[in-house]
Length: 177
Image 1 (cartoon, helix red, strand yellow):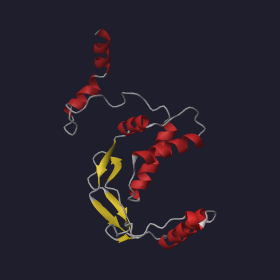
Image 2 (image 1 turned 30 degrees about the vertical axis):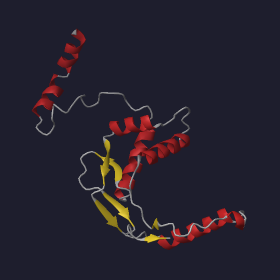
Image 3 (image 1 turned 180 degrees about the horizontal axis):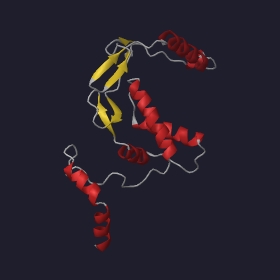
Image 4 (image 1 turned 135 degrees about the horizontal axis):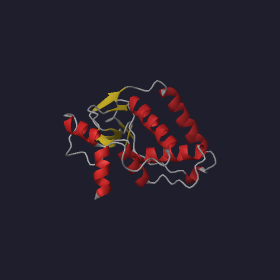
């Protein structure tokens, strides 16, 4: 096709640079950089990337559902009408920004500094939620084991990351009933 040949001639220097670059594999490269569908909501994607970077710097696990929820939240904050931010959109966002799912390689064990306030807040919230419920409708599930900490084994992070720590409170095997 004549048009393709003309495009290749215009891109001759870029193509030769890729061919001579020993760090990139031409076999793995399907599309030249800068090609493909552009982001429909670039401001949302930029803020979403910052959110993911921040969470990963804090060694927190990031999931696709977290990304979708945050995108919807940002869309509402920026008054974007008609945006669904579906799971398909999240997959395309991840592909565009070279984000992949990684398996945890190590646990980053550190107790949160605000642990007492988190416990106090949990107890206060549970009391508020059960305040208007009659005692006869509250059921006790005795001997139902739960773990104090249930860390995820996977997280979303950038391609090429070798160490994938996920923060825990250090009691992943300790249970309560």
